[in-house]
Amino acid sequence: MRALETVLLAKGYVDPAALDLIVETYETKIGPRCGAQVVAKAWVDPAYRQRLLADGTAAVAELSFSGRQGEHLKVVENTGQVHNLVVCTLCSCYPWPVLGLPPVWYKSAPYRSRAVIDPRGVLADFGVTLPRDKTIRVWDSTAEMRYLVLPQRPAGTEGWSEERLAELVTRDSMIGTGLPHPAGAGA
Ligand code: FE
Figure 1 (cartoon, rainbow, N blue to C red):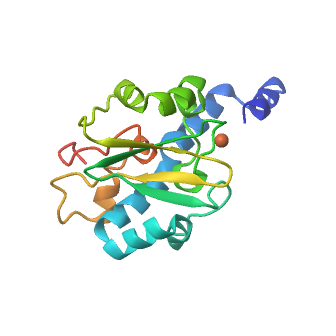
Figure 2 (cartoon, protein in one colour; figure 1 turned 120 degrees about the vertical axis):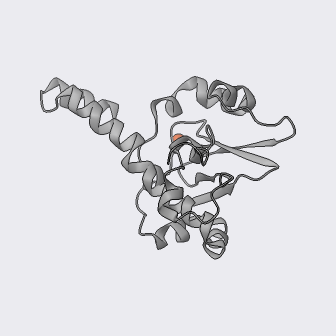
């Protein structure tokens, strides 16, 4: 991406501000909304949740999200006992069909190395403090296997529609570096 971008910029094909805006949109808006719909559906539909955990690729394809870099998708569920965190220690493998483009920090050397060595410290840097007795499980992505975190459904959302629930699902909550918005956050 970066190399192509450099060529396009040098040759004057691309206005840097416009390109930044497009990348930003795919990182934070369009891309992760697909994952948010998957998560919200899993929260309201127990049968879908089971299918999602059993075969993420097939369950995500039910919602017509599929394509490159999403061929083998494993969904890992956060519970009262376990918090999941996704990294790619080698490069930047990421589940494109459900999350869009990876954020810049996901590709950074400090994230890639520290997520494995000190996941609790990384979470603290992202403003996430978990109970001490909660286990943190780190999943190292590869070209063959990508991971999506199924976060815990926020309290106080009983009876909410999928659409409304999806508003609570942040990109970072599906990587494991964040939590969903709480029910009272104005969604
Ligand atoms: Fe990678």
